[in-house]
Length: 76
Image (cartoon, rainbow, N blue to C red; front, top):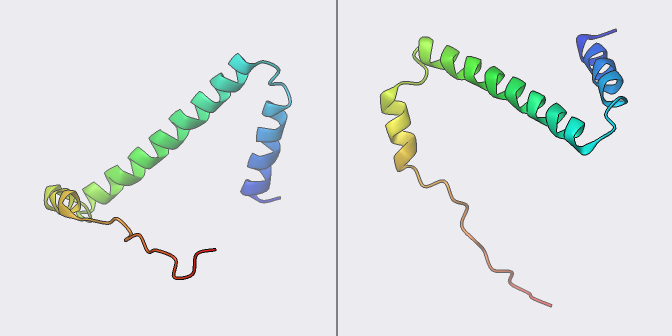
């Protein structure tokens, strides 16, 4: 069994016992904290190896990444 499958089974075993809105909110909060910590570790690794630095972050702040809106040629 892969780690992914084991994780899925663990999550299914956890969520089967969620019976109230507050338990669901607590579970979602726990997952959010876990994912935020994981993202922070990955960001820290990029910073530590020099992939991301202050200059990179300043450049990101100047980028305009919005996708241009395109009108449909044929509107029905």
